[in-house]
Image (cartoon, rainbow, N blue to C red):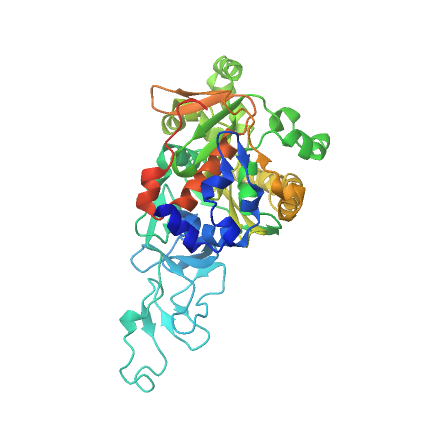
Length: 459
């Protein structure tokens, strides 16, 4: 019955209705059907079944410092306003007036006393309540109850160590349960024991690619030596930094993952041989990384997490970049367009020169002016375009089988699990496997009952 309902609700052509989301992902062989990157009906279903159910990152609490502070964001393609109300509670309001559907806010960020629709002047309090209607008595003559016509809100809004998330689905588990240890580790790799603040301004640019290709690239350590050869030749990046062979992968429930380089045994021994001041100097030389030297970092990240230098993704589309100084949202704008939002964070109590160094690094690494993402965006663009083609290329699946069946999941006594290996595609395949589970589940109870648990044994 669950599968039949999915077939009925999607707008796929009759010839495609026999295919379920799991039919597009061959987990056994590591193959992914190209159709999921270009099909309009699949994309529309993603907006409902993934973005409409998931906990979506909204902003950092430092971006809402006072009553009336607000930040505009999206859940899928729905524009929402994160705002601190008069009680100090963070609300997430859907940016549409219930009268004629006009937006009630057009600024991306700021501070206000209320939200007013510029069409007819309906005025809404910071919690979404309708507090003013021009001509309420004269024109409506008792026919409008203000308490029934406030702004619609997200079903739940919760924070994890200052990172604010919201969901449209009242059935969703609490944020803490949704993140699990892998999702929380991903955010803790930002250095959440520090007093983090968001740098004013968010870098935004659009790339003609599917949002999932932009997400799976963050786990990909196979491409840097080729794609970013110019950045290496320029001397701005060390080849060893962009192409580390020692990798560690952590896979969490609901699609969260951390994948990338680790601190090796040799590096650990070399660090251990240094004095405290020498070790601190090593971390201080890396912008925003001195926090890893602290005892609290080791306790927060755990014995496995403290070794990770990889990229986390909070499913569906929140990337924590290397070094923990940036977040990037891959905001969907249709099956073939993605908008990238880059947030930069600094330790509020760090020296000003350290803060400037973090911002300089963020500007040069990623975003529209970054040396790396210009290369990446070109790749994603071409990959998406060829997935639209109707001849041989469209019929041939993409290969995500690197390392498939070759590695073992190890479980630390702490409970943290990981795969320690070479460059691989475990996290990418986990992303697409999870995508199929989200797309096929009717509701949150079904997703909770049927999603894959953290893997054990051979992977």
